[in-house]
Image 1 (cartoon, rainbow, N blue to C red):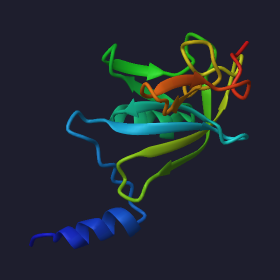
Image 2: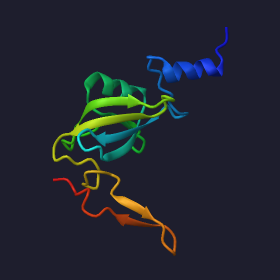
Image 3: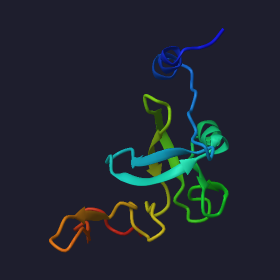
Image 4: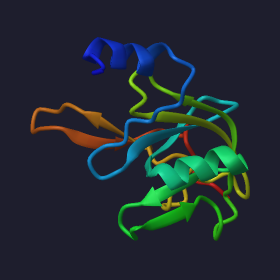
Length: 140
């Protein structure tokens, strides 16, 4: 018996079964926001182990593509991300973590609250980056 594409889509989109659709590298994008303010903190990647550990522990775990290893966010910095809510999108190919950040409340390796501290602005000479004015301070 074969499963049609429509049946598979129905299962992924409407069923209560968690069936993450990892990419060819075995990863799924993970968007992380502050649970209280809604500010986007970071975009990272999870493999199956990171997703499972996040579900099991209630703390954010990611896959570090540069270090090629599992990464418990905040394990060394104290900026542990306590997961308040974990969602998956309609295609089950991206996850969204709503977190409370421990320590000094930072998230970005630059010391900022969010990794998204610059806006892309179209200018006559081409697109330029502008720092967000005051809305996202550095942590600590």
